[in-house]
Image (cartoon, rainbow, N blue to C red):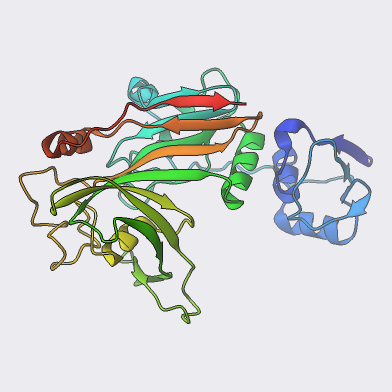
Length: 331
């Protein structure tokens, strides 16, 4: 074995060096990677680097002679998908090209597994290869009861590029919600720090003070799109930050809890979590309507998702009219 050089391809752009090494040398441990970097045995373009450095196309990686440990079989965190689910999953696809797949995730379907969860999106992604050798990868999340746009990467390199766009806040996210009451002012910015409280699966997100060292900065822009008197409002929500349950807690903070939100709505706040008005559906009325992001191959991708059945019914009853969903790749 001898020293070799490998050039980073376009598809491997923005991948961390340690992850790139583990992909090409599956038995290599993180400790060994860090030692190689610390001692200069692994270099990028001839320079010493940290294991967490992100790679760019055309860079060369110096690879020392590696005696990697035998790769151990890894038990997947999900059960093999049932092929009968293929039609169900493919029906969720609202956009697909060589780089990405976009789903309209139904309300009630978890994105990932957990205690007591046997069916989830991550466990079915092998059914969405569409002839690709790579299994699609999740690049962001939606809550179980939130419906709408869910973006998948079709290769590791694309996943890295998309993750960088999310980290850099280059992705515009638009949600629709039906809330109880009518917020005043009818549009504005919610700038309210949040913190996680509780534990042992009883975790919640709660408002925090600005001097709370455990709190995270959280901002949501909102706009009223329509209303049914003073009882219900159709809101457009644009999260500037991405905290757990941010939109749900921020809506409660302006006195307009999201319909069906039994976890966060307050008993004295219009009954959104339990005392439903006019026989409306009881599911959470929060929908990821749109993503706008830099496409990994260039241009700007915009994808919208149609409302889930329970929100379509609520819109019908309240007289709200949603425009048809669109998808476009521009530039």
